[in-house]
Length: 84
Image 1 (cartoon, rainbow, N blue to C red):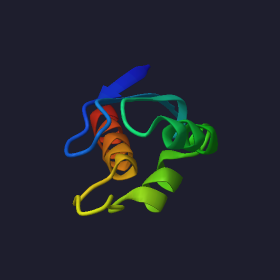
Image 2 (image 1 turned 90 degrees about the vertical axis):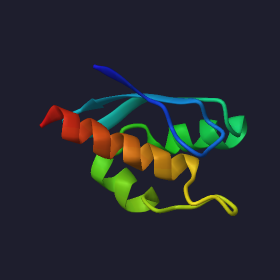
Image 3 (image 1 turned 45 degrees about the vertical axis):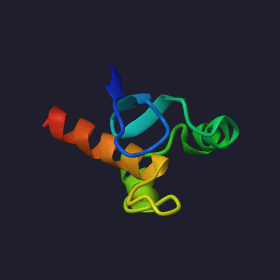
Image 4 (image 1 turned 60 degrees about the horizontal axis):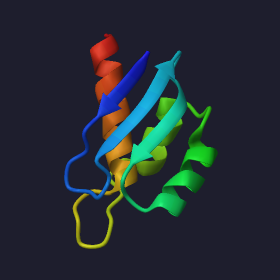
């Protein structure tokens, strides 16, 4: 199932991904720093939600209290809560 998340406080406008058996696939970011996000997608594809959350939850960007990767971690947490 494809999930969409509208991040708050960052440059990206949408995060889209599939979450099957806690594994992330088909990760797409709309907006943001294109090159960096494309590289991160390659690194994160096939990783577990637990691993991604552990790596990025609480990560900030500049003076912002959040970041694109923190928002991804939040999206994954939300997706898991919805499945319960």
